[in-house]
Image (cartoon, rainbow, N blue to C red; front, side, top):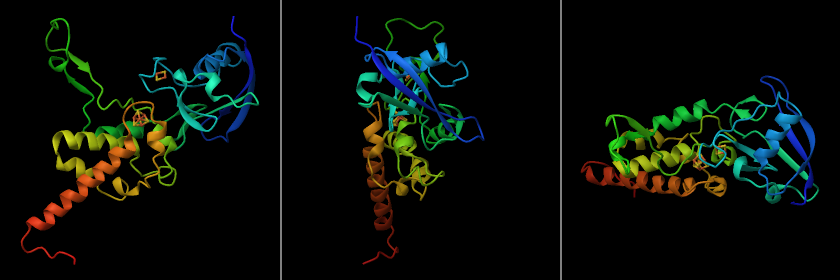
Length: 247
Ligand code: SF4
Ligand code: FES
């Protein structure tokens, strides 16, 4: 039988267009439980009006992202033991840099729409999947993840540049654009992100890569896309014979 910890779960709650407030819940938990388990317990035994997002419970769907004691985490794989303050406080807040819909639920629709603009393929023909059987019927389609991005939005929440501008594309979108561009050389993808709200607003803080729960490394991808964009511009300058080149 594990030794239980007494923790104070502080939840930042908010209804649309109302000021946020903190509610406290005293819990006894196994420290190896995950933060999402504690939130579900509050919902099950203390307050059914608490709203939060979750689905897979194994770091695949990206739905359970929140700020836990000030750091962006997938709460379904974050053990209480690792994040609880020594004074027993575990504070949970919605992700930053997204509109709050209710309590711990943020509106990610704009984020998903931007991801689609990068032409990142989220589906692929089943024929491209390595399957141990013949698909029947052969025309069905299957979802496929690319560059390991689970579209959780943690990087957007942690990004200081996204915190200063709502029009900034954000790390995940720029990382997706880099992936697509390196795969396809599609100039429209480069044009999409070669702007003040795209590649050039990033401050190279690398906070996005620090919190990313997957293998995306968005900061590195943004730098790589900048290199590709500069190289493309220089090639265009030098291949035009009448182009004036700055000394
Ligand atoms: S880049 Fe990483 S942190 Fe950002 S949405 Fe994708 S998986 Fe999440
Ligand atoms: S519930 Fe799916 S990633 Fe956490």
